[in-house]
Length: 355
Image (cartoon, rainbow, N blue to C red; front, side):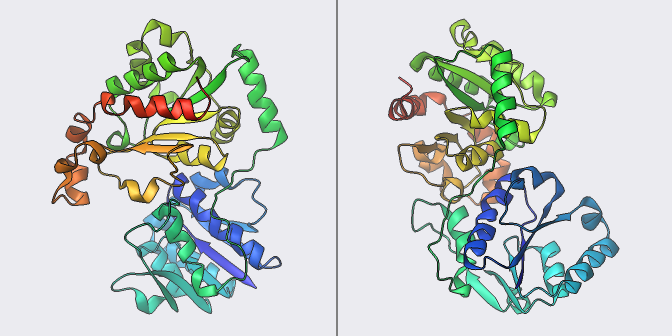
């Protein structure tokens, strides 16, 4: 049996959708399971033996109809028995149409049902604390009626060398071994997903004031100035706990560093999803335009907590579409005061043994 899973999105989406591959491997241990993703997301799939082949969707496929057609014809030659489209947008529709897979599964959405043999309801509300991001992906397995116990948890696979390299980096920076370590997801993937920097410095202060911990900042070198802005706005007592220059050189080394941490706090995004896949407790600050019900995965009020402006100022969201909220996101962020959830951070720290 040959199976193709498609998820042309960013790191968090690709990691979450890998649960489709993981469960397919349990159900069909001898199948060829291929995963089509953006090239920049492949580091989160390294070491995942449930995937036979990673097929890259590159910029050339997005920019050239000819290249997209070539990719579709390449997939057609594979004669897949099952194709699961977790992306379900124009680029993947073309590939699905060309693939000639015997069975094609995706979400039931207007105007595209003819492309698929199985159209799964796109549920608007979560039924469990898994969150819609997880539940929707798992729903794509339902037409196959798999006779297995479904595992809903995404996994990252860290090599011994990656762990040892991270430990060596901790030692190089003289990270205190008698304290736990918290990673701060300092910046989102874009400004509209980044909690205001002056507010974030207060969040870091709350952490430092309420727990004797080491603090690491997650940022790219190109984000150095923003990271400095947060650091400089923190109290001196907080700054003394921050290992500002302790960074991974690439995504895999970052994963190794997160694996040495004890929790993550900060902006929603790939870093949070990677930490969860490493079984680290998380405290998420959601952007006003992101739906918490989708990405507040595994929320249990203990190990995984999240906050959203809507939790505190619901009137600001009445009769607002996602498009409207995205446009107003920066102004709404300014209303999302860190004081609103100071007690929630204290609770999170206490419940996860940071006091």
